Length: 265
Image (cartoon, rainbow, N blue to C red; front, top):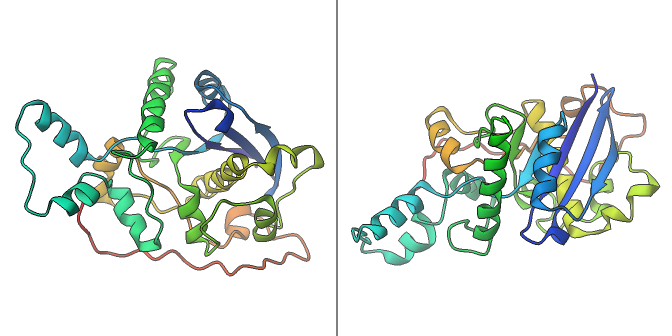
């Protein structure tokens, strides 16, 4: 069955926003669309009108602890603990999904304090516009056709270098992916390559291969967002078909570790 997955790499600068679409026809993926730059309005239209699976590189929300802290500060009721350094850098800065990503040594920038916060605010407005159009968005990614992801963490889970991906790396790691000549120049930027990693993650999510929140984490993830990644070898479990003859990958894909520990939030 044919499926299209979109990856979106977001920024407050439209020139740094990119979308990449991959069509999985008979299980064999082919890049069919690359869009950049993208305005917030264009992003809303893309998600609302395309019948596709999406994975987006942007925080869908803020840590519950941070939201509660801001409300307490407004009411002159903030009470910092003795260990204020850890409180500032971890307790207020990390979502539940960020804490889980520590298992893969791929901690995202905090949406609470870093420049990433500007992009999170932009996404909040996009989410509002989508809901106004009747698009139901589950920030946890447990339901629906849209989820949050983080390319650096996705690369780490695949045991690939944790750096900005290049088209050469993508083609080496995923040689079953067909990329036409018309897409090579648009895919030459960091932003488009990040969007490509997101599009691949969207496929894994659609196949039920990403790591979602545990049962006790779902309510929190529906407020804060949840970063979906997978360590599954991108073989038949991804495509639903046997790989093309001659398929060879220069990387070894390792299973993602799933710890049962519940670290500090």
